[in-house]
Amino acid sequence: MARIMPMAASSIRPSLSSLRFCRFCVSHCSSRKFASFHLGTAVPQMQSFGVKASKLLREKGSNFSIGAVSMAHASTATTQENVLDWVKQDKRRMLHVVYRVGDLDRTIKFYTECLGMKLLRKRDVPEERYTNAFLGYGPEDSHFVIELTYNYGIDKYDIGLAFGHFGIAVEDVAKSVELIKAKGGKVTREPGPVKGGNTVIAFIEDPDGYKFELLERGPTPEPLCQVMLRVGDLDRAINFYQKIFILQAYGMELLRTRDNPEYKYTIAMLGYGPEDKSAVMELTYNYGVSEYDKGNAYAQIAIGTDDVYKTAEAIRLGGGKITREPGPLPGISTKIVACQDPDGWKAVFVDNIDFLKELE
Image (tube, rainbow, N blue to C red; front, side, top):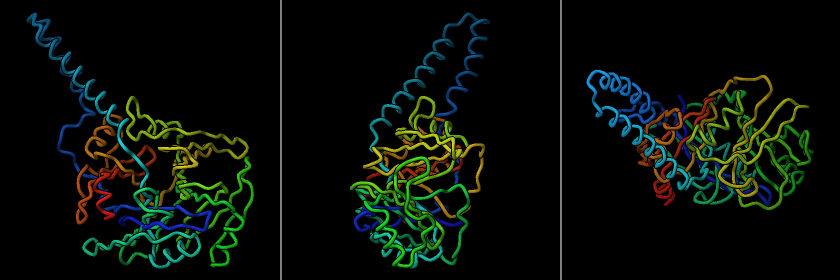
C-alpha cells in the first residue's frame, strides 16, 4: 500500500498566495489493536454489572451493589465531561492535506510555476521508501499546505470518484487562468460564475489528475482554502465532524450549507475558522448517491492537537473509528493518532509541539 508524506508550501501571484498541503504514510496509519481500556465500552459494561447488582440486592438485601453502580455511572459521566471540556480548549488547526503523486519533481514544477506555490521543505525516508514534499503559500506553522508523497517505484495512482478538488482563492480568476495556460497547465473549466451562484470560478488539473478550483475572492491570509470530498449521507457526516453525539471529537464548526436542487446536490462547509480566513472542508452530497470509489491516490487531512492521547479518547467516546493508535511515527518521532469518518475518509491528528519541532 502506498505511503503518505508531508509537503511544502509556496505562494501564487497574488491570487494564489497561501496554498499548502501535506500527507502521512499509509503504512503508518494502518490499524493496530488497542490494548488499553476502551472508554467506549464503559456504559455496556456498567449495564451488565447493574443487572448482577440488582439480582444480588434482591437475594441478599445488600445496598453495596447499588452504590457501586451509581459510582461507576458517575465516573463515566465525569470522564465524558472532562474530555468534552478539554476538546473545547484544544488548539486545533488544519495543517496540511496529504496525497500521492507519481513524479515528485514534475508535480513540484507544476505547483511552483503554474500555481505560484513555494517548495517549503522535502523529507526523504529511504528505510520506508518514500519522499515527502511540502508546498504552499506561506510557512507551515501558520498556513494550510500540501504534503505530497512519492512512494519509490510507483508512478501512477487511481484518484477515484469520491475525491472532489482543492480550492485556491485568487483575486482575478481570468488572469490566473491565463498564467496557467502560458505555463502549459490544463484548464478543464473556463472562468465564469458557479452554477446557481455568482462567484467566478475556473477548474484546472495537475499532471496526476487532481483538480483545483480557482475561486475569485478578495485578499485572504489562506489562499489554499478548500478540500472538497463527496459523502453518501450529509447529515451523518456533519454529525461526525461537528459533534459526534455529545462529544466534539473533531470540534469543527458547521459554517454553512447550500442546497442546489436544480443540479441535485447539497454542500456543507466545516472548519475551525471563517471561510475567508481559514482552510475549510467542503462536503458534497449528490442526490441519491450513497457510495463512491475512493481510489488510492488521496490520503488524508492532518489536524494539529495539543494531545493525541486525549484526542483518541474523545474520538472513542464519540463513536469514532481509530485506525492508528496514538503514538510516535517510526523514523520521525512525531506523535499522531489516525481515525476514519463514516464515509471512510481519513484524518490524522498531529501533536502540535512535535509538529513545530519538525519545522526547526
